[in-house]
Amino acid sequence: MSNHLFDAFRSRMPAPARLLMETDDGRSLTYGDMLARSAQLAHALLQLDVEPGDRVAVQVEKSPEAVLLYLACLRAGAVFLPLNTAYTLAELEYFFGDAEPRLVVCDPARAADVGALAKKSGAVTVTLGRDGRGSLPDRASRLPMDFHDVARGPDDLAAILYTSG
Image (cartoon, rainbow, N blue to C red):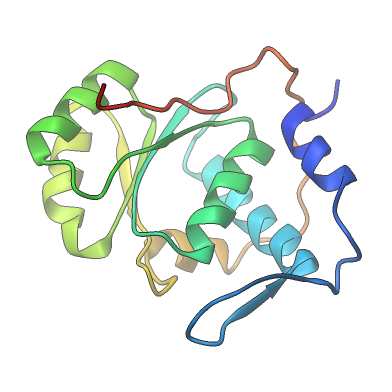
């Protein structure tokens, strides 16, 4: 079995040196960078005891690193659970209780409050800021840049999306 969703992405990927994205502040990321950095983040998820099918709740600002985290979740077989940055602590408490994440990733400025809620639901908390800094990328930066993607099929859950309606 392959990693169904990430394999579909990888099969349509141009050469590793091609530009994947460029930010307003001048940062750029190639497809090769994406593979290496998402591999490091996938290794970090495994180090944090995230197993295939575990939920990873993510309440961070939009950034290239947030996209890389989504891809790392796919590669590790985790279920990506994006949460709006405007959600209150009471709303987060509901989502954590309902989805039962193994890991919560939040902005460093909210780590104390969000971390306390996550701990109540049995989750570990790490941080990821809009600037790409935080405890998760710090951990990942020391890990291998290659990763053997976890086998997942077309019926395996890849994300949970809560809506307001």
